[in-house]
Image (cartoon, rainbow, N blue to C red; front, side, top):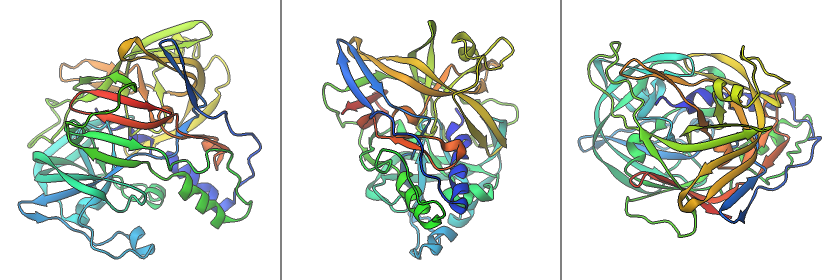
Length: 428
């Protein structure tokens, strides 16, 4: 499945815009602190907001035989005074991506060689995107703690060699300024690992954001603190999590269109993507049940147009039946930015092991169809995408400038257990 995260990353551009304009004082109180409580077999989470404040990252080391590929620091690193030679690259850890996606800028800096006869088409929010395919390389990954520009902990070698997807599109200048290059490590690596995500230091103070109007430096400092990524630790497949946590089984589905007639040459290294098979949404007496993609690259959660109709949020023509609760601009490398409507739905329920039901109350979701054409020519539209706003600290007010409120993490720790195909949530 193509990375929805790459298409949603444009959200950070909104935050950039308020740097030059100053920050208005928040005029609304912070949301109720996210919490969980047992009600028999039901665990309830409240207080999650529109979009996650940060995303998990790792470092990717690429080797050609015994030689590790290196690069000079990028423009942003040089501006910050970091002139050390890079022996690995920071990348977003993305369950919504099937393989490895390397930006054209990163490929040029590290000297990643393209197989000139190969083209592979990925499908995103704006249709098919032709990408190059690299020669096979040996890969290793390491976690990140604190500064995402540097790896933390030991590198774990991945099995075999992998061919990377090379994104030939240039990053938009505003996105490049805020996010730098956008590189992705997806399920081809995650399926071999137990990923521990610790959100403890994310999201600033977890309350209202109050910057000094007209003080761009203070606004920038708040943004840096707000968008701090979680700590990521990588474990071997034998790592076990604690008993008593919420365990959500995952079904692996292959969304890759490997036999597309538009592809040619070498195939990239890809894997299936994790789907939560039983997600039920309820709003004003109407209910919808379906399977949702688990996407650690999506800062927002998404429901399909069909699901929004079933819940009474859209009419038969796809128009909102009432004024949306919020709007967020979503865009991507293959298309423009669109303002998608967002709604707060009363209840989102996930079936977990042990007859446990994980319930999110007042869950914020964006309405957008995300579709992919499979090898058998069937077009599949995802029922929904479970994004990071329901798993990590989240913020509201992003579409109008500096967030007006931030909610703390609903869980003290997340585990993505690739070999056992499960998501484990450690309760606060």
